[in-house]
Image (cartoon, rainbow, N blue to C red; front, side, top):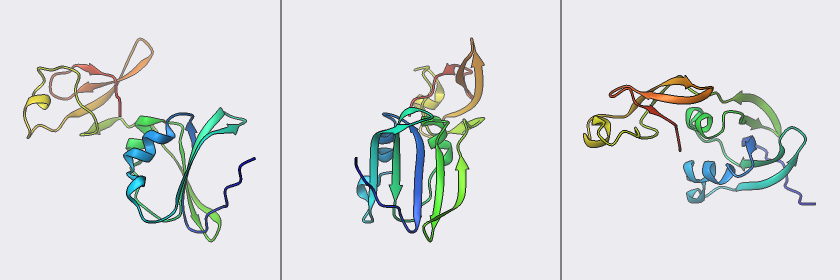
Length: 143
């Protein structure tokens, strides 16, 4: 069994769907930091079967919107003095700006540098999409 020590002060991103940990690691640019970071992949979980976990031995700003788009069931734990002092859950945001592109190649947000892509949450046939604020095209989000 692999043993990873607890952290004294920092952040633990938990309940990541197995396979999404590397996406989050890359989006947070954790390969560029100078403090200890651990990415655990395929950790056994009673709730998920398998999950990924990221432990960061430092306090950094994490974009909960971006995390919610990658995996809405993630839990972000803030650790101080070896104890969880704050536990935050991510959700899929109702509005998103600049995190992904519209799938319509003719949309102004894809051709004009001044038009930042803006989207509103939409549902269609039981699936979650985002509606472009410029052309109204439904776009599935991929980060």
